[in-house]
Image 1 (tube, rainbow, N blue to C red):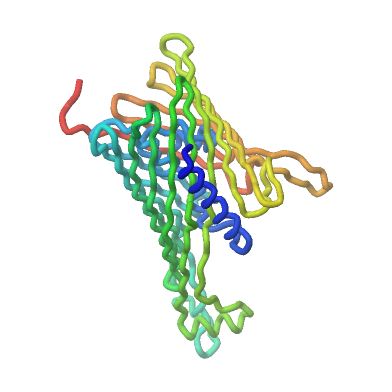
Image 2 (image 1 turned 45 degrees about the vertical axis):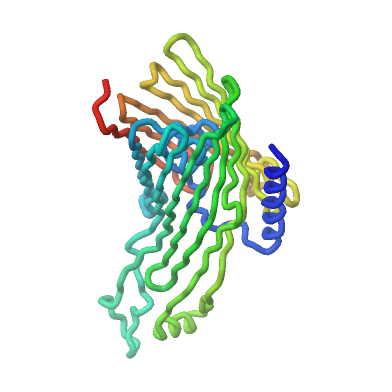
Length: 360
């Protein structure tokens, strides 16, 4: 890394530390769920190996692995027994032999939430016809750009992202942030680094409550929300991956990631008073580049039970994939057993390449 790059990294980390003193730890957490069943099946360890349209999320530098004139990716999953739905759609297009552009859309939402704030009319009577419904949704739009540099094996990329969050007609927020990443190949090894929300992502919340709703809040002892700003602090994800050959048809890919946060101590495997490190491990075994088996672990946490016994918990993940010509279908089973507070999730994703002309 040259002196300018080092200075920029120091500036980012210093900015992160300053913001961390007052900012909340968790903001825009829907952007931490991940995209692509391949990635989730490998334990969310993907910043080094990602080389398709999902790289717009994991590491924009990986978009340079996109094949075809246009690559499209989509994913759907459900959480909390189908109450919440998580959707992802993205496209990526090579501009020339050295650059690629991509656009991604992510939505996490709970729909058809009953609104009972007007259940009781002015005369104190229950009127169930006054019940309406609304949606609480988190939306993100990512515009990605990746480019090869003159240094052999070095690629860089960046995201500009717009976040829109809404809670029915009551509240909404707009936010804007930047990500930056790089990948570097050296023999069978691939190294990567991604800075998420490198300048901080600021969500400006505004609320619009009718007087009737304000009165309900007051009678039920709820505080009236006020307009404000929510900040998503920078994170630094480091990754290394290696490809192995086992015979003429078997390929093995192993990757390790470490997500670094700087907002005081979190419940992670590695932590100090100001820094936390969350490791992730993933493995993929492919046969003839058609069938793939995947496994990974992440979300290492120390848990204390009712007897004050402290133990290390983690989240296992498994997945399979099938690739036929230009179409890839992937499946992942994540959050297995008691690896987290949510029920396990079945995740499906689809990816395909489009060509202007037929190719043999």
